[in-house]
Length: 405
Image (tube, rainbow, N blue to C red; front, side, top):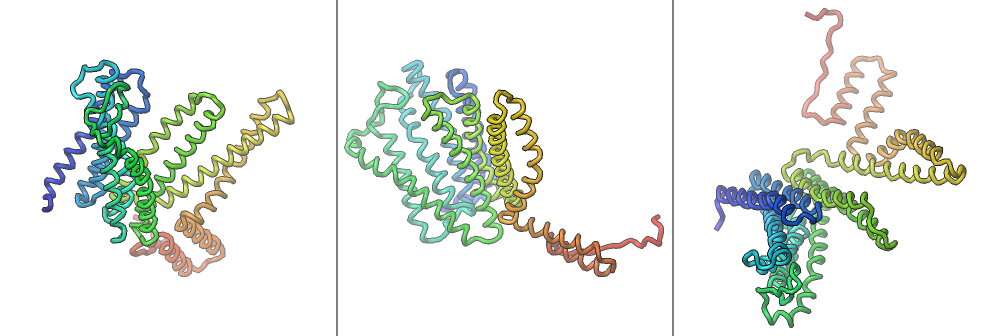
């Protein structure tokens, strides 16, 4: 039986309100109860409100789109976890026995990462952007993903182990016979990332078959996910490098780690842009600009370090000279390098802009030698049609022999 549209809207608003209030409202309570807590945790809670926000925006416009309900479910799980974690820490660690059912809440909270990560990595990708499967043959992937997420949630809730928040507190929801089934749980756990890979393959299949608007929608999600992955991978490699040297992470790396966490908000934002189609057609330009400035920044950084090293070896003890030489080199290279890299990237990723620029350039050269007004008019309208593709175009020329009134 289908749920009426009005009921679905009220349900969506209810889920959004609970998840948003829980995620944001718990921040001052968390800072009061746990003053030594990592600030990025509170920032992550606030940032993650973007997920249910995008969900409610999509639900208002497209209540039948499953993506909206997946985003709202992820937001609700995060909201519950935001409240449960400080609750259990206070009731089991700081002041044991002071809060009712703290151990039960801790047992449930220990499983919430599964639907949060599982829904994001499986159904959100597999059903994007219209809330439907790419095809009938992907139905087994959807079933296996759902069963895997459900089994893992139940396994973590009823597992006969000690709770994470309290070293001496046993799980009050534990079921004894699950202790012998622990190897089975360990077998099911790797199935989740395999399901994520299968869902990613479904998105690739959808992209290869797509045309027009749907292709642009998939591009938005792919671009956001790729940027988040690159940032997070870079930060992980930097932390790993300091760990290998036995050194603590410097303050600037800790600050970048918080920035890396904040980049995750790009994924729900990209989903919202793609489905609501606000600014959808700017994705090629966005990819082009992001890639161009990334390449230019990386190249200039390498040149800067190279010049400092070379000049430092040639003039030891004169660090100001090496810095000045590096700065002047960077200033001289920036504009030519940016134009060259932009042209190369546009040729590959922003073909429409590249072709338009080339068309205007050819028209400008032809205009220098053209004096016939009718030919200029025809060429100009042709360039406008080719680059802007308007529904209609016309050219009005004022008669210069007649004065304006």
